[in-house]
Length: 256
Image (cartoon, rainbow, N blue to C red):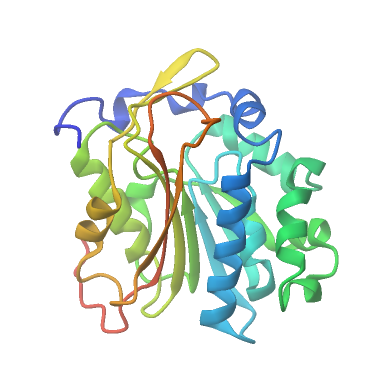
């Protein structure tokens, strides 16, 4: 893991993040690893929530990724998309009003599962239920949302291990006790470029995630892994990690 103090989050101009370039590189063509992740998320939420609906959901650091929000649709009356970058927020505001076909493979993967067909039109449902709000992972309120997702955020906004740990803990802290969550991570990421601009990362593994979440989540925390395979998304990482779990029912952590 990266040493503290190197490449802190505040050292980078996140308003200069190019959402169109990131979207084209990461999601213009649905990758098998992302499809498998969204399928696992759907199964996990169905297992945990059964017939529950009308929950308050959150996706932290949405960027240009809608598949976490799609995975929450059957269970939520509202989904808050928290995003720090102004450029990403503009993209999100446009996309949720009528999302583009790039997200259709993800919905097709979900639509064969129980509860998801009940959504009907996912484009209209997302437009009705999703709201974009400015915000930082480090300033999330505590005990607010009843289901949550966070994909490729905590380890991809800083090169400082302590900021990674704080961000992950803040995400969990924003959920009500017992709330299910799904979070995705780039494994051993060395940083990444978007439209030629370098952005930071912390090189983490599932052990780092487990250690950070110790005492914050229920003991049935589970992981799924995708290795880089023959066609990596980019250079400088060894795979993707999906963590699914529930915030502890007896959460007693004080706000930091």
